[in-house]
Length: 124
Image (cartoon, rainbow, N blue to C red; front, side, top):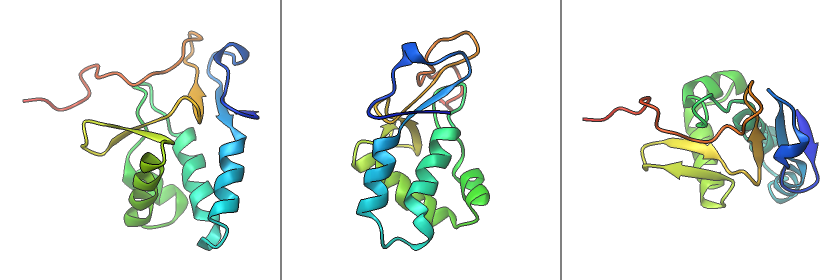
């Protein structure tokens, strides 16, 4: 993981590396300083580290288990982050991706991982 003061730059990352905007974490820590156990920063850090090959973030249950908290807490913060522009909603069905101003993941070929519906979404 590489930290940037401001939005991450893809050209400064190598294959398989994650770039994160550390200023966002500082702002969240200051703004939600009364939150129990600094849970907002922990959830956002888990989200950034859980970007999948499809570009979406991982399952809600997995995140709650890693953070040792409830599904409701993780979902509440995901929704709040999406409302504030840190996450992007897809199809309003619970699928989120990290906004490129917050975090960028490079795949093993050195390309930026972006959300794509490569057959992983259920369709009728």
